[in-house]
Amino acid sequence: MSALYTVAEIRQIEVAALAALPASTLMQRAGQACANSVLELTAHDPDGTILILAGPGNNGGDALQAAYYLAQSDLAVSVALYADETRYSTDALHALQCARASGALFLDINDPRHLGTGRWSLVVDGLFGIGLQRPISGTLRSAIEYIDSLQVPILAIDVPSGLDADTGTVVGGSAGIAVHADHTLTFIGDKTGLHTCDGVDYCGSISVDTLAIDSTHFPPPHAWLSQPSLFSASLRPRRGNSHKGSNGDVLVLGGAPGMGGAVMLAARSAAYGGAGRVLAGFLEQAPAYDPVHPELMLRLAADLNFGNATLVVGTGLGTSRQAHDLLSRALHASGPLVLDADALNLIAAEPGLQHVLLNARSRAVMITPHPLEAARLLALDVGQIQHDRPQAARQLAQRFGVVAVLKGAGSVIAYPDGDIIINTSGNPALASGGTGDVLAGLCGALLAQGWPLRDAAPAAVWLHGKAADQLVASGSGPIGLTASELAPAIRTLINKINRDNGHRTAFTRSPPQIMARHSVSDFRSVDTDTA
Image 1 (cartoon, rainbow, N blue to C red):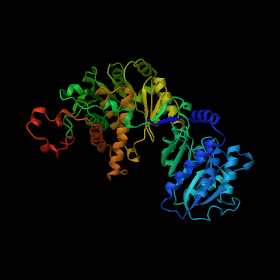
Image 2: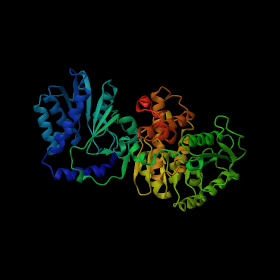
Image 3: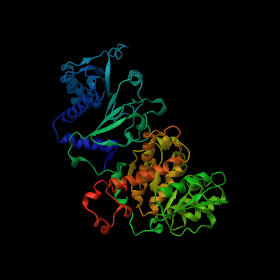
């Protein structure tokens, strides 16, 4: 699993490693790693010049060390030094001396045209690392604006300058600026902010170099990147001796007048996600049947027996008194629970419902808010939620004793114990109406099939996003991709993962007595995974 670390944790690791290594070792390793990345990225353009922007801290020292190694490799290297060298650390000053002796060309930053004098094949951003606290301004801001305007790749060292490595926000918000990198080479360990909020747009492709630091210096992580290995143990093949009851019941509750489509999207998603039976409960009159998926059962919500079914509540629910009473009844039921949309708005508005939710801790409960719904639940504004999405997700999980999925770019899955997972799949195609309803239905389907809550949440979010990625790759989007297209793609993806894991259902397994009637050669062309 790919662990994520906070800036404070990275600092602790670095201090421990420095105490056990000779001087300049880590900076030399960082510079060499950066130089290696540059060589790989510019292999197609060996005659261009590498532009290196070196800032005032150790991030600048790493860049200068890279300049030294690149010049030693006979590459044309130009360095723009934005630092008072008298304030450099001993390691950074040594890197500067090496770079100056290497043949790298140092530009005169006092010349307004200093960055416009070369044919750059790649720019290395070594201005600021993980310690930046204030918005970038003045000459440095102008330098970032210039390199962002170039049509050449940018490699950011450790973190794109101007980006908060913990939160993924641009330092200073709307008053700040950050480098739009095409590639980010981050050191020691991966950082949460590279994968959520603005980090999704500013980091490009991300690679990690641990700088060969001994693993004993790393603390136990409390954050990870989402990937199938996190939940693959729960994705099991269907038993031959099974029936619809073996795969659980999902009840989707909502469908206020004018919002019935949300219920249908969630219900269809639950069916495509593998639930054995799916019932859609409407606040008022239910349609006779779903002409697209007549296997769904449509009912008046008040008439449903919740039993031990998995409940998905809130899609198109509205905030009427009738909606409130249905939600209260669902909160008192005994089965797993997924709360979305208006269910969350009702809970945010009424302490009594919050109290009932807190008393439901013994159940598997998942909430799936978008930032505005999260803000209502935490009595904050959206800006505060987005300013630190990992922390907001943790607060939701801990305050309500649930697994919280804070949706958005780099969705954050948080657990009551403080652990988080940041999702890596998905794209702007999901920024359209109804995709959240599809996610809620999928969450319900996995819980109904017996998935542990800790696996179901990251699995549903990853599958939801990955299905969108594959649709876009096939030409369906991102512009104009509709929520209805997601559920079939999710089904295809689930079954493909099962096949790739070597799982075969009873349907694809040939009975031994039939196989015994033929020679081996008769079956050489049969693909049992797809038969």
